[in-house]
Amino acid sequence: MGNAVLYMSMSVDGFIAGPNDGPDNGIGDGGSRLHDWFGMEAEISHLDAVARLSGVNRDVMDEVMATGAVVTGRRTFENAGGWGGDHHDGVPIFVLTRREPDATLQWPAVTYVSDVKDAVRMAKEAAGDKDVLVHGAVTARLALAAGALDELQIHLVPVLLGQGRRLFEDMPPGHIELEPVRAFGGPGVQHLRYRVRQAG
Image (cartoon, rainbow, N blue to C red):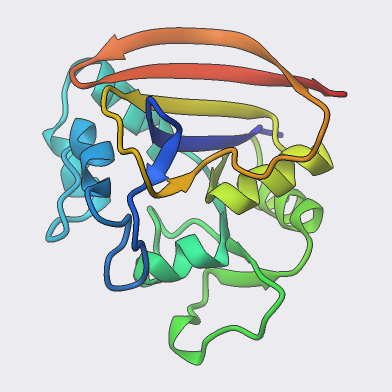
């Protein structure tokens, strides 16, 4: 069985979206800078963006797109328009939510789940030996707290956003130990991968 891996682009000051993020403003004011390293533009798909890459950044995005299922928070899912029901390659998408799903955001590959442990377990079963891609700040924090997140892959972008949505805001007291797995740089980004060791 694969790992549940958070893949997240983040500014040096810890933001994953600029201010005023929402369905009509995806990753917020100025937040698109966080995705410049993989050439993601509003008018092209993930696959088209990946096809344009080369070198280390291409290797990292190929790894992301090789995941066998997705676990995402509802806010992330809705801000992305549900990826049209297909994040990549038709893999199953498990959306963490406590509210009834929006009728306009229901597709065959999408399952709404209320518990983060259940969402990760179901995604791992669906993914088989492939990793599970985890999206969303709240989902990441809940999965960490529940011991359900195996690894973090942070794409650290050399920019200070100053405002917006932070990845690790409002974490509970205590600490979580991380073991560095790898670190390397590509154009416009440092790719950092950590294994979650223990919560304390």
